[in-house]
Length: 116
Image (cartoon, one colour):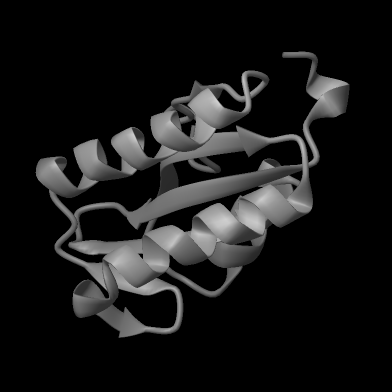
């Protein structure tokens, strides 16, 4: 997928060495990470990001994930104790979503960190 066709991302960010994850959406991954990191003294990295060609699709997917894991919500877009089973469910949700729209793709941005 060409980068210029990407309009939005849904991300799962993690406060390193903690059980807390932020599920949100953005148009600019690097700028969003800087903004989240600014108000947190601990390192935050992207656990996973998902690409979308429309902001509406990203918004819908973000809300779908947040609703699915509402029982783990601690505050606004922050969730606790997401585990490998949860991440597998999110992948499955994304792949089902993507199968309806063949131009989606996903990437792991674990390496994107302000501390590198």
